[in-house]
Length: 117
Length: 117
DNA sequence: TTGTTAATTAACGAATGAGTTAACTAGAGC
DNA sequence: GCTCTAGTTAACTCATTCGTTAATTAACAA
Image (cartoon, rainbow over the protein chains, first blue to last red):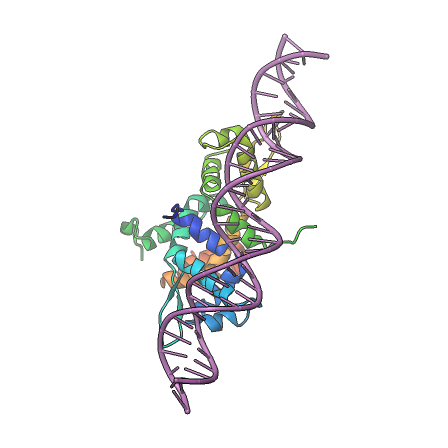
């Protein structure tokens, strides 16, 4: 049994690596196999494989299977959690973000009653 | 000379620790000295001191001086950088965020021409 | 069956991160 | 000067992370 680290820590830690962020950026353009994700990077395939596992553990990536390939997809729920975490601080860096905050609340499903035209 | 790690990595890494995020949350309520920041946590003062250094290096906290105290303040520029990084992905988790995106662009000063009523 | 491709697992080393206690710096107050 | 308080630096663990190469699994192709 591993000591369970809270979700946000896992997510932030996963994002704290430029190679992993590059992989997410690639996946934002569409699904990609492990090999395709590895191609632009100057590291071994096992290293890429473990980067992907970190992203999976954080919930940022999911893997499918197609014969011997593992098509990877971007998953955004963790990013929404970051948005939610950020909402505490957003007022500090922009005062006129009330509209934004409302929007995010709607999006997060935390208060769906404030919908506007 | 240290090998310079990119800013976003430093910021995300700083946020990947629950103690440090708790300190930021405390600072969101106003300035606090190192001792005040340490109080709620069950770790030694040197540990807190180094957590603060990590936050400072990430630009999330700045320290002043008042006699032998070091009042710490929340700095939000790094959080804005995260917002900017997130903007690439925001469209994935919410389609109707055009208004939000516009807002953020305005806020980031990247395209101030789309301001609307 | 044999070989090839895609990806993961194993085993290891180097660097980093987070914690500790002990020692130090620096300002305040007497 | 001496002492107390606030905070940092030093020296040391221990665990994790990130990279490597070698071995393994699994699916296809001949």
